[in-house]
Image (cartoon, rainbow, N blue to C red; front, top):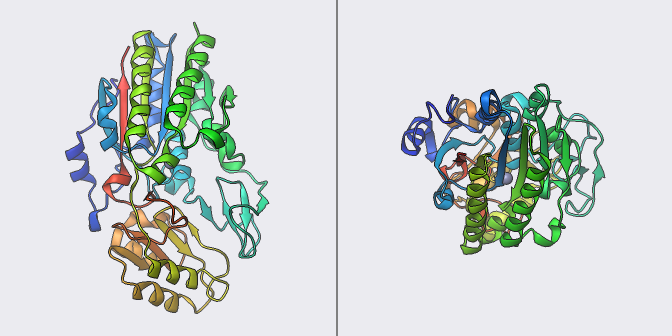
Length: 390
Ligand SMILES: [Zn+2]
């Protein structure tokens, strides 16, 4: 099979996947859940002696991928919620969100004490009394295990070298589940806390790490997978010139790797879209996300958040949020959202008060962010799969 055989173009995919309120729904035939199958094909048969390289560029939108200069770029749908924790598990296991159940990064969980929520990225749980950025208790349970592409290839004698990049700063059950089965899990060369908002340095360290893995994998079928976190930069600055320059450097390296005999794939987990939070909405959210109305801090996934309301409090909470009249903000119970959006909302937790952005306005966790993701708009949900052929 040729990669992308049977895939449709951007306009056709958008038309086929369109839902209500400008939403794009995960496509059953052309989504990031197809990536493991594509890699399996790339590393089997007559070409099995060379390397396949996967550049997992976090936060790269479909629009920004146009300047990659790849041999071909296919559109894929992301998952809902369109967040990293949900999407990377799908992209490495092939499982839909309904199957792996990761809707976070923040949610209640049966394995953590009541009154607290678990932040999967930070590997910690916290309650109302904690500062969520600093405090919290490490979680010890496991997630999955799910059948990752790394475990699958290992069963066929293919070595996988997984470069964690910024994921190295998020140790815990989620990261363990993501890289399960990898032959080598490689820590980054530089401190990500230093380079996280420096796209040029992110590009150069990415290229150096892949070059190093290529040298170590000569003559053996190898999958080199690297996480490239440009997402944080986009949260603050959008798809600006430094972002584009970094992407062009990575693209030139991809061309070089392909010319030297590797199959190179680049894809992302979700895009981002401009997001704002008015003072009125921030105040309303601060009022309802409190021990007066809720059993624990809110859960959420970027531009979709949910409250764990106390018995009898939901109607008042929804009324307070709806009263802000934020443009495009859906406020309702899980059943309400299923009624509006259809089965895609069935993955959401059983909350009586969920908010979801369909336009710019949203109660942001971090109001310094200018771009955010998690919801179902086109910018968040359509992502690129770029290929450089040998
Ligand atoms: Zn992401």
